[in-house]
Image 1 (cartoon, rainbow, N blue to C red):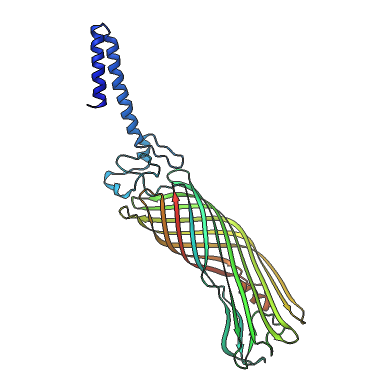
Image 2 (image 1 turned 180 degrees about the vertical axis):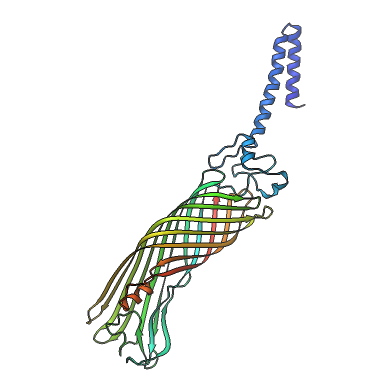
Length: 394
């Protein structure tokens, strides 16, 4: 016997006793109370199916939720399960897999810079102006290096969120070249107003490094969605910093000794950030593919410092450069991933590329100093490589 039947039997029994006792009014009120409680409980259970607590947004009205997130019974296979804390969802379709959630994330970056290799010395047959190259070239080229990106997301609603993140990457390398036979080395870094080669130019070396940091704050919102696909658009602000360093050394003659050239190229900029991302997910396997693109326009100062010193004699050569520019930073990524049924755990891996446009590279700056020209010192610095990401969301 169910609870309702047992309760009704008890009430009927009591009411019969009170009926014979002349208390018909009390019996009728008790029966009415039973049906009122039953109706309230049924209504509450029905309403709770539509209560989804996500980012502080609670839908207690079924019609409101259905109007904002329509779903036909036949398309329910495009949705995953409910929220991570076991919140209630619609009885015909569960909460969409693409909803914006609060959480934290971390990325491992493995990138290689492009357009940054520095030719610091060339081997030639003698020290005269008519000398010709003999083959070996000293090149300082930064290889793949690790970096990271960390951040958090705060869901404003089921369709929008605030995202903050920090990105850091740095790479460096060193290289050395030694002359063969009776040949000599001609420096491509030492200023040509002084001797760039000599009888003692037996070996040359260079150390170079690049480092950049990005701080982003953006608002992300659903642009378009279906059962399996979602497009999001984002906008916000970005701070960017890049630092490039180089130290090249070479002996030229006994009189000068070791000649050292140090350069430092820096950039600090701030601007706005725009982005678009898309995903397509399989409800059966949880596997997904994604693509994203971002463009930021940073206004800031590119500065350069060149300093050449001699171990013994020959004086020094110095140069300082400064230029305010709008430097677009473009980034794109394509990859695959997996998201569990509840949407709380998500992992992706992709191939990414970024470009710092209208920038100043070390090699471009050195060429400008050596040619005594401060015009057209602009170059695009690229980064390309792998990105893996893990998200914990709720």
